[in-house]
Length: 170
Image: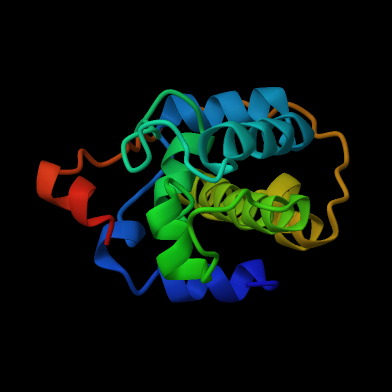
């Protein structure tokens, strides 16, 4: 679990996890706010939503849309303690340590970076320089200021998961 890129490769084998994408609005929001802000939001949301030993409404606490971190949580199996236990081997019933939260946040940010890069490539035909080195930054925790990029054509939307998929958490 210490390797976000390796974890993303493993998660990509899940049909349920692999279908998530940032919406155009989420991608625009992430670019406008910058990587450091989104990384801070990711850490805060993970702490509040899954950090406790017994999170409120565990298994139903993470929305599918509304912030770039939400689809990333579903894509990276950091949406509930059951998924964290299944995919990362961190048992339910105890608080997550700061180190575990940092590692989970690094995977979430690596997914967001990759999805932003994929979005930029689909719009321009080439990777976006501002996110091309972000995966390594997510591992080291370094953040540089990002210039705002304009997001133009191309719409992507988060998949609507069926009730069965939501229960299963692939």
